[in-house]
Amino acid sequence: MTKDFTQEFKDSQAKAWAENILAVLKAPDPIHAVREEVTALIFDCARFQVLVLDAAPNPDPTGLRGWLGISGELRHHLDLLSTTDTYLADCVRSNSGVANPAAVWEAVLLRYRVLWAGMNIFNALRDPLGDVHKEIGSDWFWPLLCIQCAVSEAVYRDGAGLPLTMNPDPQVTLKISSTLLSLVELVRGGSEYPDLEWQQINKVSLPRHA
Image (cartoon, rainbow, N blue to C red; front, side, top):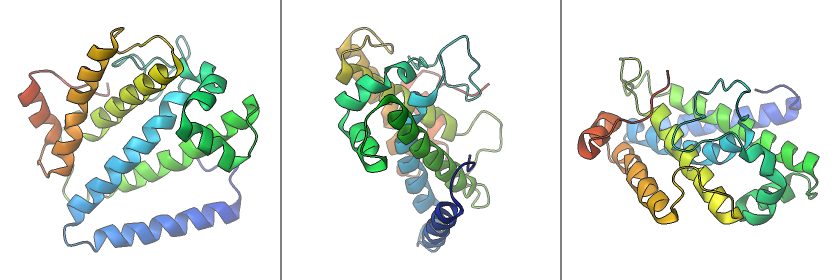
């Protein structure tokens, strides 16, 4: 994920991550601090994850495509989205100041790669802290990433006037999104197994990585 970055950029980013890691591990409640960092990075990374996914029949190594309206189609609408989404437009401007297709893709890919790496680095801190469910497929990280990707796609589509894929009814999409995002509060609130608690509350199974 670091290919094509300059050594100066990689060194600077590594230093920033190292300083942040030390800060969260020294926090009075390191598990809570790490969870806060991971959920924030999931939120930011998901915004770009849905923009770099390929549509079918191309392979999807993330396993995200197909869940909750995650389509892999937004990549083909980057020019439109870079004009209808303020956050994305600011990202493009800060990267190159130019909004041609190549510059938009470069800005999206650069930001995604940095966020993806940071998200996985901080998520890896949970294991030594004893905050990972040992049973494969029973941890909250991937379901929450999937949820944030689905909500991000819905927000992009709504803002750009594209057909909604989570549900064609905007009000239903909003209701589903709100219910799904309640998982965030369980994670931040200190639930030992927030994904399992969410399923018990809502009587619905969360997406799981095969």
